[in-house]
Image (cartoon, rainbow, N blue to C red):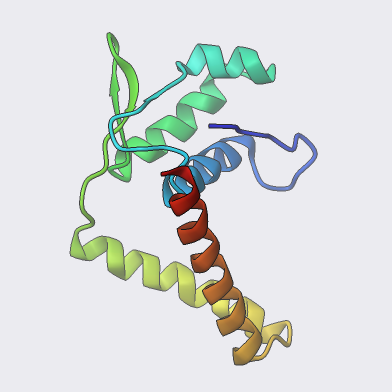
Length: 129
């Protein structure tokens, strides 16, 4: 999987790492059971503090996406979402949709964007297989 960080972005580096791993899973670049680089290795690759990578990996662990082990490192280990995930996800989505609405985006544009993103995940996943 290819990660790229924007050092000048307003999005914190740990969130960029977390988000790109999530997107990699959604489009099939990463699979359940796949190993990720160690926190130190990924930090060295990007020239960033390993605590930054550790924070991203720990978030993914708490979200049920990674399993962290001293011997085996970071392994993608997907667990099914519990009901509390759906509630939290809906709340985050509500804020994003409210932001789009406030900025003048129509429901048609929002719907088109959502369908396009979901289709891109599917087509990338099919291309990987």
